[in-house]
Image 1 (cartoon, rainbow, N blue to C red):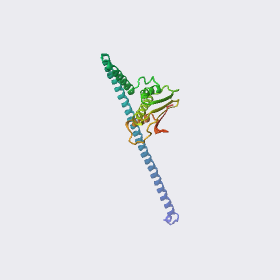
Image 2: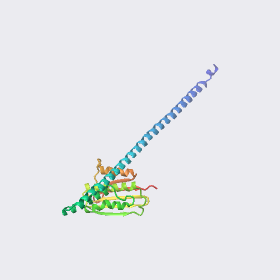
Image 3: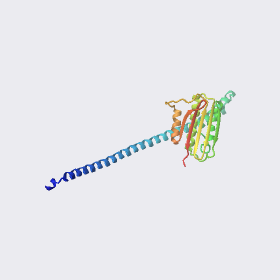
Image 4: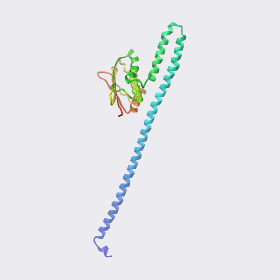
Length: 247
């Protein structure tokens, strides 16, 4: 009973209570931090899974495109061109010789556009010439390539850059009303750089991008590269593409 009369006793009780309260608060804080970390970790896992899923969809979308192009190219080359050649051999009408020859050449060009022949054996500039040569009847083409390090470029990189150029040229042909196209390709040890400029109507920002623009964005993302359209001076549009090589 004498302890209750001790003036220090309430202080010890208060100190003990505060200590227990502090200890409880400490455990609550620790548990709260662990809970928050777990929630953040789970959210990050969800984000990572979503990114992985989107990347798989991206890859599948491009793979499906290429398989379909290859199938159609084979049909055009084996079936359509074959039939046209048989008709050409059987034809005795002189007035049909030139149209038949032109039709075969057109079918061959379409087949090559869909799937470039000798992809692994061809350099990027050689692939580009296949896209640009038919355009020389419509545009004045100024093409320069520097390919000191165009060796062992993966097929996936080649085909995607080739498709990107196709889409850019098609976009110019359809919308730019241009007369000249300037293409610069540089294949360096650490990077691949491509620029395409025209003297057409100029860059127009369009939030509702067409299929061609979406394909450019899709293939750029697959390569983990960078690309953009900007205004060209004094007039026209400029397209820039930059790919950093691995290693």
